[in-house]
Length: 202
Image (cartoon, rainbow, N blue to C red; front, side, top):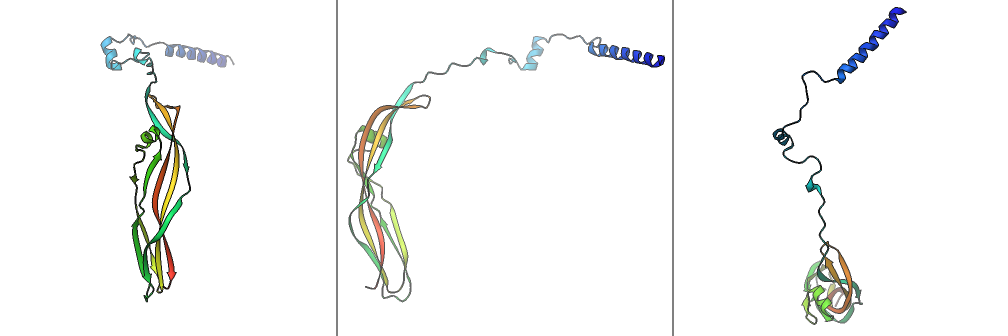
C-alpha cells in the first residue's frame, strides 16, 4: 500500500513538472520585433489592419439626366374590311391529276399617325401625317384535285389604334419618375388580307 501511494505521488510531481517545462520557452529562443525592411518583405508594403483607404466613399448625388416619352396605354380598334376583290385564280378543272399551286403577294402594309403631339413624335420617332411602309410577302400554296379551282380573294383592311404617352424624368442612378405630362395620338394601319377559296367546277 505504501509503495502504491509513493508511486502516485512521484507520478503527479512528474506531470506537474513536465507541464511547467512545456509552458516555458526554450533557452536561447528569445523573441524580437522585425525590422522595417523585413516587415515590408513579409507584408508587401500593404497595410494589414485598419487603413485610411478603407474608409467608404461618399455616394455621388442623384441628378436628373434627361426625359423620355413612354407608351402607357394602347387601345386597338376592330379591324374592318373596306373592300374586296379577286386577286387571282388557279384552275385544275380540266386536269387529270393533282395540281400543286403557289401564289405570292404583298400585304401592302402601311401606317400613319393621324393625330398626336410631341409625345407621339418623340416616343416613336415619327412625324404626324407621314405614311410609313411595313409591307411583307405573303405566300399561299396548296394542291388542287382534278375538277377543282381556287380563287384568291384580296380584302383591303383598316385598323385604328389609340396610344397614350407619358413623359418620364430620368436620373443618374437608373431610376425614373412620371412627370404627369401626357400626350395621346391615333394611328391608322392599312393592309391587304388574302383568303383562298376552293370551288368545284366552273
